[in-house]
Length: 397
Ligand SMILES: Cc1ncc(COP(=O)(O)O)c(C=O)c1O
Picture (cartoon, rainbow, N blue to C red):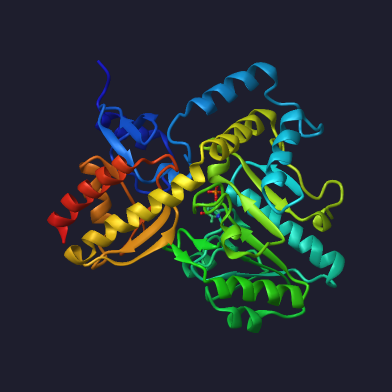
């Protein structure tokens, strides 16, 4: 007989290094909008692998791309170009405002690459300027440099010595950036919507103001679209909604639909690395590049950006209907990166109660719930989510 979830959980705690508190269900299987644990319990997934499984769980396109490419070529070595990396780079440059692509494996690594590129730019064209301005409340990853870049005060003293060269300013505040800029500044980096910071959306004037400020001072504008990119906000990239082009953009999460894959995209004039400055064993590895192409093509062909926009609007409409009844505030976000505030700091209680009822939610801040379901979510699954949410809030609020 198969052991139940709680004994899997105890076993996992014995052998997996502790890094965070994980709840008891041990996940085993996924299909579309649903996950199943080792007890066979089904969960409607509004976490989506942390804004990752844009085509849902275990989609056929990924299975097919993996199988086909695994039989052709898994790894050619980073010392060679391969056909899949080339095709995928062409696809990304065709659908974006960028000309050059560097592939890696995770969001943190892509952001590290973007910062290296910005520092290279500073060393070549701005008398060695190497400081990057980032925002309070931002999240850029967990490598040592990205922890320093991230705008969480508590992280600035963790794992000393801190990587230098990052200055934090308030989000949605052009004047804050202007005041922090100096001859040492080479770039400004931000998320068009702060995800982990609680779904904080950048104003249009903020983004256009930053673009102008950067242009006037020959400073690079970097968008971390690790969470907002690949359809999440209702367009392929969030920058499109601002009518502004960044100089560098990073992508991860949704780009692989669940496999480890990320990318740095840059304008042609930033093709400035010298040999050996940047690289990585798995950079442009054909297996992942084949999956990335299949995922991005399906997002385009399936019209999933538009579905994200429409279902996002429908979620907001349904939340507005129950807003007063439960004291919900600040329903916000774009597409399928949405958040709302609870009447008190009860995010984890709501998450736990919803999980009991078979709904997976996320609470990035104590009083905030974030919704980031796969882009394939259907209207019935929005209704199903709202029904469970109402049940949970009726009990807790
Ligand atoms: C905006 C943003 N940047 C970077 C990262 C880090 O990505 P990864 O965990 O793949 O390193 C995340 C992860 O949540 C993110 O949301």
